Length: 338
Image (tube, rainbow, N blue to C red):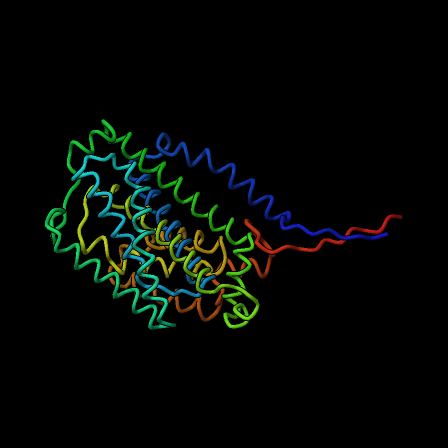
């Protein structure tokens, strides 16, 4: 007699998860097998993986297409510099505080932005980021418009030599990226994730079935702001310097993040990771071409959106059935006993 059972894991996801677990010690040991340039690049990749995963949670599941997440990148960075420069707080300890502060600030911001819909929400989020940039450009305690550098005693107190400092920053980036992906996977596998999926598919239908759309979006927005704030604090710590134009750059912290998520695959956990890796490979291969490099990136983005609307990972998953972190449950039928 045949039967059936339900589970999420597939053979491809078990293999993928095993490869991910095997890569963790290799990545953790990077400060010993990679030089300073390699570690700095890996920090940048991990930061963008975190930012793209959080933006994907916002836009790919909650339908909140923000082009103003640089607001929380900059706010997190300035929080770290303020705590470290003015109060002598260890920069590494200031990172979670930056996440908490950005989460608190995001609540009234969400109350304002949630009154807007579609493109108006996107424009409004960018305007909020510009307001933050202008406010901090006039804050003379941290250098005003020209910015400020982290005091040397604070840097030395964090780590006595460059190797240790770079290693601490790298391990923090690795931990934040892993925590972000794990949080996204946990949320999307829970009842909360079912509510998010319902909102993404049809907000009106989700509301009529008892989903608290506004509350669900608020939770996602605040969590994304907190994670973005911590990553922004880490970015400023890695650079040892901050300025309003770099901390609140729409190109660096919104446009590139959107590009990575779109080409990798919006609405999937693996997509932003793949998109971030592909972007850095493209940047390394095309950086010598000057402005043509940006034109090629734009053409690639347009091509992917036209030929594979779900991104490259969506295309691969549709043709092969691969899932590293599967979200859907599958029914497996057992063969009848002979």
